[in-house]
Image 1 (cartoon, rainbow, N blue to C red):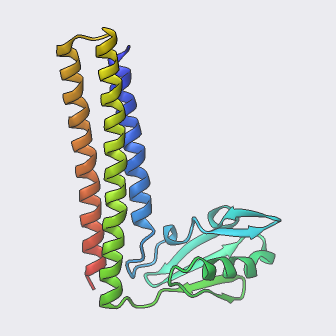
Image 2 (image 1 turned 180 degrees about the horizontal axis):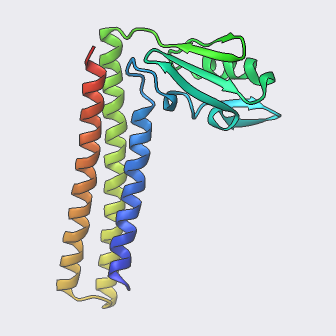
Length: 186
């Protein structure tokens, strides 16, 4: 068993979890327009479901508006419908050759609700990081039982895996605190 490879794999898996969690947090509506808020919406076009980012250009001309300009103008209605169906609290309307999405002002209650959602996403991320740690620990214990590594090597590996875990959990915590600050500031 190559222990350096195991550590790299654990680090890589945890980084993927953190990246996914950060992407989820970016989709939360903070009152400031961002293309990530809607780029993952599925739109039914050409007889299949496609991501909005794959069929249109998404821009933010100002802090409170998102513009979606499809590459094929016949998709305007489908894009408008998909944004409304996504139930993100964003209204969409067709204006010429773009779908315009003005962001509504967030109420205090809605901000607190979004903070709770952000903390839920962060907790899911932390759980997934811990699952990566558990899998690595089981691999180390299995190697120890088979005699592939000594007791001292196993302890060193377990400490290294825990150190990596702590680093990524702290990263998630930092991201959710930043998002909470953005959500609660007016």
